[in-house]
Amino acid sequence: MFASDKKTASLHNKNILVTGGAGFIGSHTSRQLVEAGCNVVVVDNFYSGHKWAVPSQAILLEGDAGDLAFMSRTLATHNIDAVIHFSGHIVVPESVANPLKYHQNNTCCSRNLIEACTKNEVRNFIFSSSAAVYGIPSHIPVDETAPTAPINPYGRSKLMTEWMLEDTANSFLTAESSDKQQNPFRYAALRYFNVAGASLDGKLGQATPDATHLIKVACEAACGKRDYIKIFGTDYPTPDGTCIRDYIHVEDLAHAHLLALSHLFKGGKSEILNCGYGTGFSVKEIISAVKQASGKNFKVIEAERRLGDPPSLIADAQRIRALLGWQPRLQDINVICETAFKWEQKQPAPSAII
Picture (tube, rainbow, N blue to C red):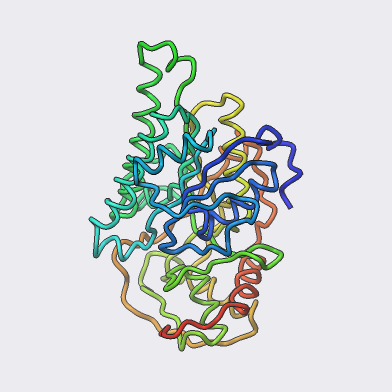
């Protein structure tokens, strides 16, 4: 549905490496890249990704995005023009319980990948960042100029990678080498809000084992794969006491990556951009939307708050719309929930989900 977009015409025949391209967002983006005429190389260690999710037209390599030697060889062998970096752990409560796992896999691996890019003259880099870098914003909606003060290791790991990208880009701008000045390292860090939904043709969706995303979990409950769903905290300072989030359809988010990549190929400067719709829904509202989409009245249990959850996160995404001409096509919570539910209906039931 996005392949004919004139804004991404500059991507035709470019060699793009996608780390984590077998995962939820990475697979949707890889498919859109292929449809835009790119030569796609996917690197994934299948920690949470799936081989079937990778487009058949893409080259698939099993490996670790943080393996400096492997990534250097891969970048050189395939004459890569740009990297889109998705791979990383994403579960906030797990990051609180095991912070070093997140700093190893998210921060250290990103550092090695950035080095591999600079050593192999790959000067265009798209990073999968997160709204978690804002922590608990003082103003809602939150724009890109808001202070960054993450309240969990996951958010910190994302912010540290943003800093590494900024420092690397600045080192090229201040370099004495004319080559570095004429061919600078440039990046776009896309700060995701809550990503959900599935492709309209039903071929791609969220298939991560033990997923914690609310819409995914609610859809599992609607399909009878869970006995119930938990609401973690009903005493937040929000209208109904539950957390509020900005939900974005995965296809719209994937397209934002193509637009950001096109921006860099056209000589655009490095950017940090929010990716959300600017509309917030509470946990209770999302559960109601999934019940409506599925026609199922599953059991809901109220539980204590989880560590690391801010009360409300809603994007001010005016900048990405103005700068890149991003125009969401699936900005409807009902479409998000309906596509997620239809996808979940086709998925096998895990052996032990409670």
